[in-house]
Amino acid sequence: MILKKIDELLTVCKVSSTEDLNIDEGFYFIGKTDDEISLVCPSANTPSDTVAREDGWRAFYIDGELDFSLIGILSKISTILANNRIGIFVVSTYNTDYILVKNENFGKAEVVLKSEGYTIE
Image (cartoon, rainbow, N blue to C red; front, side, top):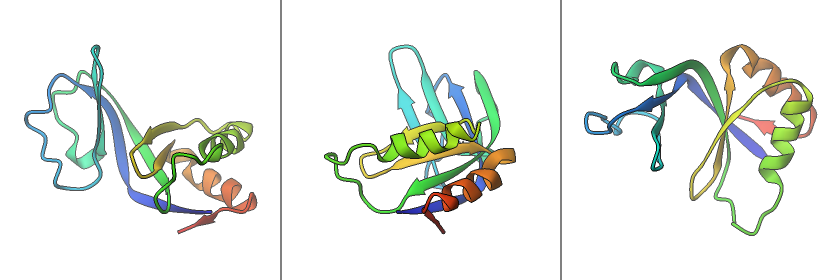
């Protein structure tokens, strides 16, 4: 399986509104529930008025569109990383999954995943 890297630093944050976001530049993921609006975006483009934020994330994503009938792909990756004491934050889209890892653990995550047979590009 091929995992691709997103090389820019990302921020995971909570915002009160999406009105002023310019989502045309770079990677953005917005999740909204009754209780919150979560945002993952390039750190350089993080809104200044966040409610809460955590900087310093990098990401891998699974190359290609994943069929909904596939089972265990994310579970296997998360187990490999958990067994190596690497925490993750995951966002899923219709097409694929994005695995975010803190920047200080990104190199280790890459080595561990490669040792388990993943191709990282």
